[in-house]
Image (cartoon, rainbow, N blue to C red; front, side):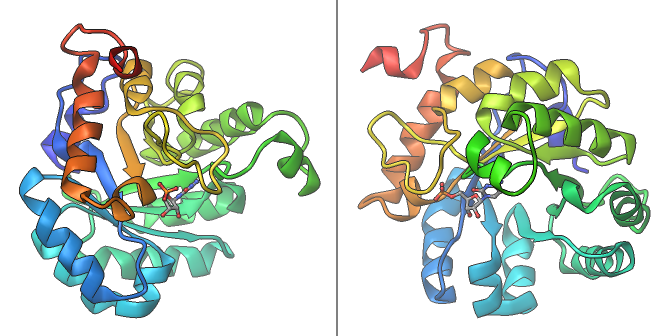
Length: 258
Ligand code: C5P
């Protein structure tokens, strides 16, 4: 892990502002569109996320290309038997990405197997466990046979992830406080479900504004459509940056300024 990211592990709002704490989801089926957005936003120092859609279009070569230039989070959410997931994690580490993820619901043996194949040196990628998708609410989760609240399940999976030596979890902004204050292991939080006031929430359910993430002590923010579908993506990122820095500048919540 890089020194910058390690600095981000301290809980609380004193964390240094670093532009790569904002990760833009390159959710495109056309690698050309992804490259164009990267070219536009790279000068701002943000990180980028490659998910299933772009990975299936551009493959490992595109991931390597992007990872040579920027911070890249490979968001393929591996969920399989321990041997298969560990092998996939090992392959992913050859792409030069700085962050990757697996599903916490894969269980302890799978999580441990994935952690064990990571090299020990400090430059290794950050390994995250996905807890409960930000598109799910309590009712939808119950329909999959998991009872209780989404928060309870996130906390349970965060405990499991810490026990297995993972670096952090993917959760919604609403659970940062729970993970930071009630789970062991000083886990990093990576939160999708970020929207500015007035943004379309799309299929996301457990959402919050960027200033709330910073206030709760969250580490990384993942933003897709509010940037990729904006008429001016550069301006959209700058708005998110100013929301992220609002707390630190002591001016109160971002939305209170509107
Ligand atoms: O467009 P939007 O900002 O909703 O994009 C969020 C991104 O974060 C998507 O690429 C989605 O796949 C990803 N993600 C998520 N929830 C998770 C993990 C990843 O929304 N739990």
